Image (tube, rainbow, N blue to C red; front, side, top):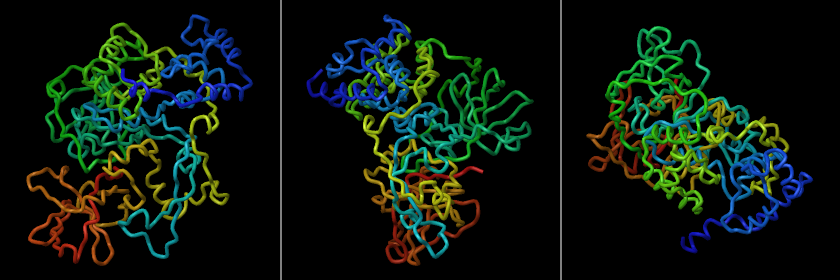
Length: 532
């Protein structure tokens, strides 16, 4: 390994001093911590924290084992993710890479890893004396406010929803839900939207089965059989018996569609033919079988997984996230649990696992881990600043901001690190997000029941592909001379801008004088919309 690459793997300086200070806050010394760990787990246990722990920290690439992290969390009462951050790693990178990396199969996103004690930039209403327009940049409706803790924000403390990302090889809901679409799933399914036997459901459901996950329409057969329905692609029809062979996770109520780019869907050969479902596994198996089953389900080879881990290591500038093919093989065949937390973060990112289930497969007792947040200075958190008049969140429930939060019901904070990937922009502002939830004539089906659109303002030359499916047509945000906005597909024809309406209702194609009657603000790259 080169010297420059070794240097990337160094933890933050003075980590030993920080550990000493953290223990001191709890009235502990390293010697006392070592004695407690020996009493709880035994000296030969992987949980044991040795007396020479500070000496080990002098090694530039040293990181406590996952079991030692668990022991430190239990003994001090501080959260496991906070201890991980002390040593330069971050478990939130799991959901970040689950969102950003391409996936052949649909995966659940581990949105539970969002640190509720982290502070994020927040907003407040701008003073307005006119109604909110149907389409407007958020910068005209909101302005930046103080930093706020995630747990203090309206609707942030109650995690009601689950999230999943549609895979390339099981996009049964294509073209409505293209590969890479993030769906929000409500696990509380009302009786009036449950799958019926008479016809395919009008709502999309997320189900689990022996081959992974499907997000699609469902048809019920009798009282205990579900049949996934694909409208456009030739997936094999299969009957799934509940609860032995399938689990109904929830109903999709909100989607975030990528419009800029996505991988075209594929029908995997094993899903195209009539396949025989197997019973769902109950409980967590050995770590080797658990990891192997996850990799096989994701349809990724050991070499592909290793190559992707190199990308993760390069992005994070930390070689401890890289996993060689031989190490990946050892985890499966020798039933070897990963030692480093960086390895666990990479495995969860690659195989669509939750950190909780991986730790359970490693037989780590999660119930006794600490729940107290570590002081901000030890985990590089920025302390929030809340103005006294808004400390109770009252202003969040008023005006446009209150309306937006009420419509969205929950803010997906786990996406805050992935905006650059979606937009293709390095610096995104409020004016790059547009409110599109007002009453308007929708000229593209993706904008039906829309809430927000993310716009790349650098893409301002409209292009329209006559032979391309609607789901792959670029959608643009247009500013008309009267100051109103229009969202539609469009093209340049003989110096004029022609709007192509794609809607269930009839609309005549509008023609504008380009740059006289209308300007192109930019290309819409993502749309958040509700599903009724």
